[in-house]
Amino acid sequence: MYKKAGQITASVVVVAVVGVAAFFIASRFAGGDASGQATQGDNTFFQELRDRLEPTIQADQALPPARGQYGDFVLVGMDPSEPRIEASCPPSSDGPVDDTERVQRSELYSPAFGDSAQAYECADGTIYGIAGHIQHEVDVTEFGLGYFVGEPLVRLEAPRERLELTTIGGRPALIEHGLDVSPFPAQTRIFVIERAPSAQQPGIMLTVYTPNGVEEGIMLAEEMMR
Image (cartoon, rainbow, N blue to C red; front, top):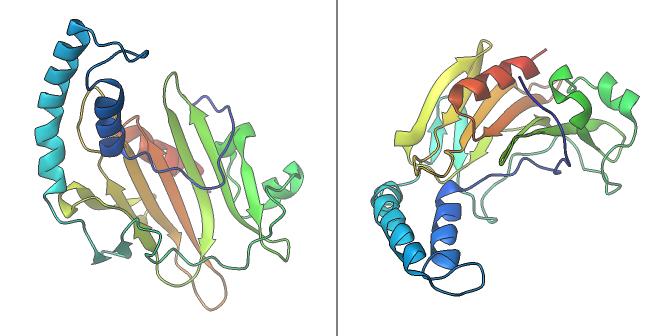
């Protein structure tokens, strides 16, 4: 079902559909083609598109973003000044781990990564996170597993109306449903606390960001769990 290919990013990229839509409309389609030359067809089509999308975007932005304790998770903002999930160790500055066998021996490795696994290690050589992605025809699904200590923080700007608490594979899960701004894909974000941290070992957080809908995102999350 999944085609795994392409370059992996160091962290799972958040695709902000609202921002993409706004930029897409404002920059290219506010009144011109790729060369900056306006056409009547473009103006009409994209004015209609903007008129259709803006009420949905504005209604979503008018709702307060969810913050604080939410189920097993703690919700914080996306601003760089906001807290980040606490890593289990100081990261190495050497870049991705270039040792396939060592990556596959890691507790965090899952066959779901296929050939796309890109791992990062602590200064002591412990692998603390593995990321991968699936290249679709025009979009990409990104996913990862990583250690954390402290609170299970999730950074988002979505209102509570687009959030859903559930369980995936018997573990606590949070789904951020993407904003419906068709024809742009609604980016689903899924977070799963695969293991809570304890005095003996760090926790494990699983993440999936996909334009392919909740069902496929859950299927991938389940595939990642060992």
